[in-house]
Amino acid sequence: MSENTKIKITNLNCFYDKHQVVFDLCLNVRSNEILSVFGPAGSGITTVLRSLNRLTELIPGASMEGEILLDEKNIWDSDVNVTDLRRRVGMVFDVPTPLPMSIYDNIAYGPRLKGEKSKSVLDGLVEKCLKDSALWDDVKARLKTSALALSGGQQQRLCIARVLALNPEVILLDRPCSGLDPISTAKIEDSLTQLKEQFTIILAPHNTQQAGRVSDKVAFLMGGMLIEEGETEEIFANPKNQKTSDYITGRFG
Image (cartoon, rainbow, N blue to C red; front, side, top):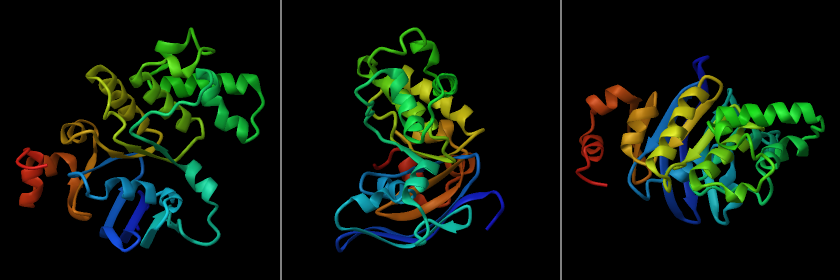
């Protein structure tokens, strides 16, 4: 395993009861890169993302086979603390889900649960996370107002900020721009480009164009199988598999 590899997936098979949705997936994710995993509906992409911090265990009937290493440690080892794993590998879903409290308290909630009580520390953390998620300028004058009053794009950036407040190492983003307007999408994409300096990011993009704009590396899945993966520019300019070419150019999917 390369010293730059953050996550190593080997022979991952995922099932819902007896229905298999991911087949023998092998994939390496480097530290401080954006990997986009894309493909048509039903390709198992959300399942792959959720398996990386064991969220699949919350789904009745779901089971996994294979190995996922995070910093060379198997996430399914018996001594792995699942709560700690989900802090290290945070996830943002396609539908923003702010907590029914103020903007400030949404971000301070996680650190407070971990025992942080210092107002100055929390103030600094809230500001940093909002800046890192490109939301600070929008909300700095109304931190005590309800997060539910924010627009959809602002709520999604708040959810990113809330994950950042837990100081993760990896951020999983499952189509975070699927319901957003182009301006909000552009703001989130800009923030992702800056965030990869601090974090490893795995993205299920809204579309292939988004994958091309923000990713260092891409992986194309179809029917639960990895068809092709590699550096973004190379895959988009010169895909080796005809299925990849057809999907990228919009011939199907």
